[in-house]
Length: 471
Image (cartoon, rainbow, N blue to C red; front, side, top):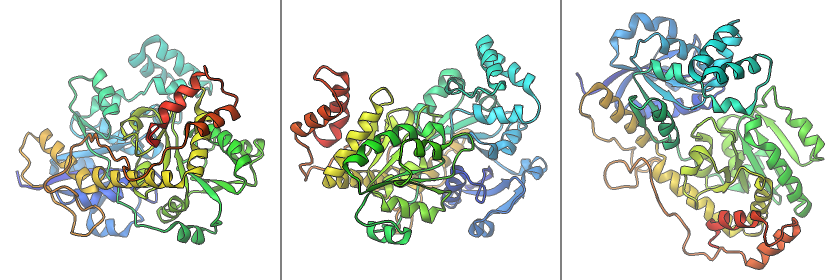
């Protein structure tokens, strides 16, 4: 077999609006260092002309006739209708092909596959096959229009996992959950790589976006749906705004048709301080990130995804609050602010907002920690090499190509002397040069303001979660 692999690559690309479109456009040039790639799309031309020039691009309908020319196939699957043609092709490959599973939960995708094609009875049957009578009961509730959070309890990914020769994921969380059900299935772990965004001064970004320079700006980035915890974030912001009236909350992303964010904003009396931008280009996302004093990237229930948008926020050096769940828990505590998803969620969000507004030095240190983490452990070159190593393993061959670094001076240039860093880093990025700890009297005063007594368990959560501040 020649040194370079020959691979068929299935993934949505822009103009299909999907985080996986952005992911593939960034990964493909790095992966092309190790493999010759042909791209298979759902009968459209990519918006990115650099990809059109670099790769052969075919409609998925031609794959069956050309499958024999490849060493293996990569099927990128997420929890949206954009992956329907990929799922269909995966099922037809008879146990060959590597499933790159971006969302552990595929139930919402599968609902569309069955119910939008008049196959309600088959949906019930398949849910019964994988989850027994309880699954059938849930399926009947879904058919009645009840899309409950319990869907996340039934990932409905089994058919895709069964059809794949092997699976590649981006977190220990997803890897362990797959192996619980399919202990014999090869499940590899590839780092999520993102390009470190160019540095944009906050003042420049705000000027380009027409945002005021003097306000405290909170930003949420990504598709607006019920699982982004925007109700909790908006409640916390409403309380925060009473103390910091010169502030605003910007929601950047396309709205879900089943989630009325505008009515929620209006009901909370926040129409004049919360702004909806709609879908934003990558350049606009970078500016909104750079303009933020703090970002929120909350998610619960989790579909088991690893968030590239979160890594981009971190790479831009912005402090960010995430939900303490799923793959987010694998990030170091001193790089992101982790918020428990429980009865204290809104109070914790409020206290962290107050803390970051009072302590800009703390916000800066947290952002620098996040930036260094992405520079060291989320490089595109490392992600591509993880792919290469795993595919070689599935081919039963020794890797013949050495790790290829980025050109000197590039943002993704490896910081280590030789080879890629460990896949699952355990690192301490804590700022040692600054005393960033607010006094206990401030914590006590804040607790009193929201009506907490000494015995309230919320105090314990606040104290534990505030470890990143050096308390």
